Image 1 (cartoon, rainbow, N blue to C red):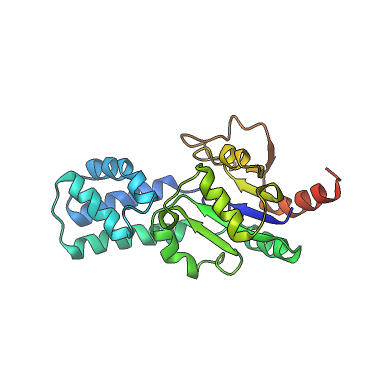
Image 2 (tube, helix red, strand yellow):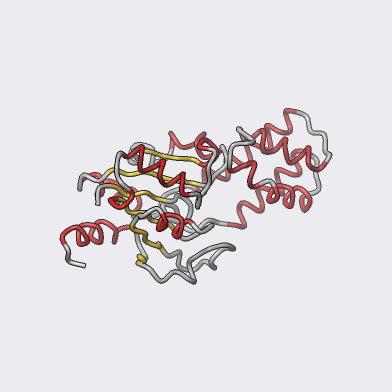
Length: 232
């Protein structure tokens, strides 16, 4: 193995607090003067445009939802709602307890690292200030790449930037949105990381996955070096 590609949420981070994001959507709706239930529904319905960069900023995401609802919101209100979302995301991307040390260990082993995250523009915006920024060689954000997992092209793009063949690469994720099967289809070695205490989200492969799995990121360096030496 020459490189490791990570998912972000529920992989490098602890389990996402869905209640916190729900509360943030309610606060965003109030900021723009929209009905919270209608705003939340329209926000969810716009996932494609938010993830693939059609809405290139958080403000554009909020504005698009308002337009879908036929609601007029002043720019100041859109900015306020956007900041609520950004602040919520900033809290959500805190690392798992063993994430930063594991990334350092992998680098010490000479392995290159990448990130593939299906995300809206708040994540690349806050990325430079996160603990991951100096430890991930090649971060790929769907909203900037115009591609989302499990499209094979986004995995292959990560490998191209890492300058490795997919067969020399490990993908680690929690299985959301078919990401494990997507990585496997392009030839990557694929590992599920579990999220104890959290019900598998919709479209997750957690419950159906029969491949390799770990409970903590700290298991990863030993697993990879064992695979290289033939010990596992």
